[in-house]
Image 1 (cartoon, rainbow, N blue to C red):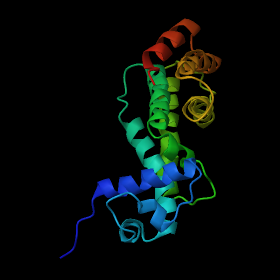
Image 2 (image 1 turned 180 degrees about the vertical axis):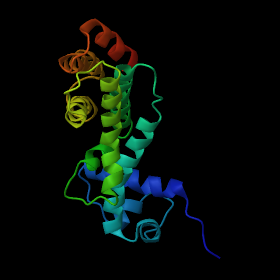
Image 3 (image 1 turned 45 degrees about the vertical axis):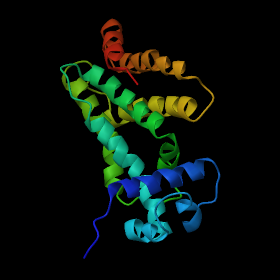
Length: 201
């Protein structure tokens, strides 16, 4: 009889490994399962071994991010949606700070690079919508603006979620994104209102 894999066990091992890395604990087969109800065999069952665990851990960060971004329902205001996507990015980082650290460790391969890239292209599509709606100039490069927006979110996530700034610093996202989107051609007052509507990390 084939045993059905339990997604909860997989998530447990991924979260535990990410936390151990973040707290500089050595991650071995035995230390990973110590204090849990699973055996070392679970690492082979779910990941094929430790190498598979590292890849899966990084990929899981992007999988959870993609789910957060997909949950942002498009509205009639594409600039509001861009701010909401940025807030979703931050919420994901703050919900899983240990996994968030691992996501951007380029020394570990990704299982599916294209799937990870789609998280950025979600922002690119939102910029395209804003440009088509006349909120941004026609000469704006959607990928460049999306990357700049991601940079703001990543900076806040790192400084608040895993760094020295208090949670209140997330409010800086409103003026930062407003300045960025205004530089792309949006009306300053309309832009500020849109960003405030979407920015709820």
